[in-house]
Image (cartoon, rainbow, N blue to C red; front, side, top):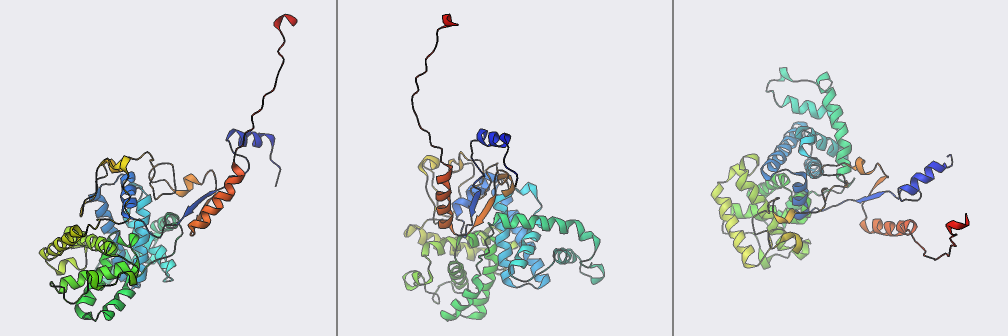
Length: 395
């Protein structure tokens, strides 16, 4: 390697840095809570109605193509999670939701070792539009050449926006064990809870909750639907939530997220059309009464900022508007995005000045930053020097 020239040294001095850039470190977030989700959506600038529409359409596309390709349920779970994380960073106007959903499914196939080519995914989605086999195309058709390159390009963004975090959660396996453990009817409660676990990925609950929380919430809501008196499912003090590493507050948040989906978007769900709307509303009322009597928050892990909240609280069952003082933030970038160049910025934009590195261990990343910071401290030493100044008459 050639030695640095004097011009390079001068440039580094002008930028205020000495030596190579220490690089940026991004730690993957296995859980993203509701407050961060709302802040990210507010920074991106998408309204709630449009966000719900794009999210439901994308997950519906993933589910239909997944069934056409006969992919397992774990691939569906992973694809939905990557689709949600992608939309927390990228602006909706920068991409088509179908391309994002196809890229998420393509990435999930690689992660879950259910390999499918991008052309096969596009071909399966195209053939779903036609009922007769005579109109179906093969994956080698030239019509899929352009979209295939788009999906491959979005795959890199999917991995970057997720922080290269391949730790995924699958509540279906625990859900089946829980139904057997509680001696519930597998034909009614079991099948309903399993279908609810698919609808759960149409919400942001998989980003916020653990596997046990999602499984218990689906089983409880299914039990409430099949038995209005709820004599077959232990709730409250009769169920040991600590044994399952969860809490009643987290279960309540997941239940209300599901009920929001079933009361406002029944057509786009699997279970919503099987039950009347009044049934979901009645369950919602009982859960709200329980939450009010025991002072359960609507969203767990919510930090109230006095300067930003200005006395505004997120009430039970409602969401704070992005125009409220809750979202008056000095920063202009998404709190979930690694970029600092505005909403929807990508990792590359920040990595222009240095290398972007992805890590899973947050403690290790903090220790490394502390060690590196010692070599980039600017220390100054003050001292006085007496200088004799000659008079102008001595010239």
